[in-house]
Length: 99
Image 1: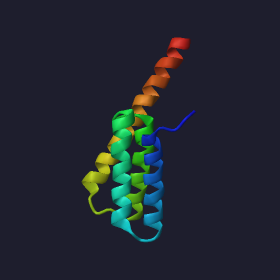
Image 2: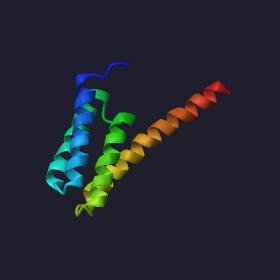
Image 3: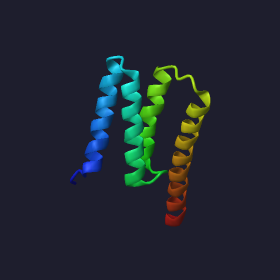
Image 4: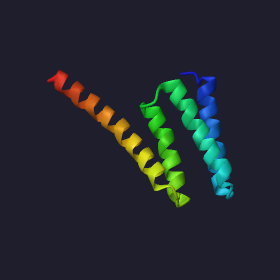
């Protein structure tokens, strides 16, 4: 399976974000995580597993940073919950169709 330019860009942004986070460059890390989310949304759609994985990295970053905007963090958690619920629902439908 080949990797598209957008996928490579997402991976590079996540790698840069993690590196910036480890070296204490929080603003740079946040920017890279947010860029990765935006590209993933454009490439895969808003509520897809791929976006969920990138959002999870952003949420973990905010938690480590003791993010001071609880409403934004709650919004991101709710998005993750919605994505997971969507996939859980599909899984239940697939299993019931197999029965």
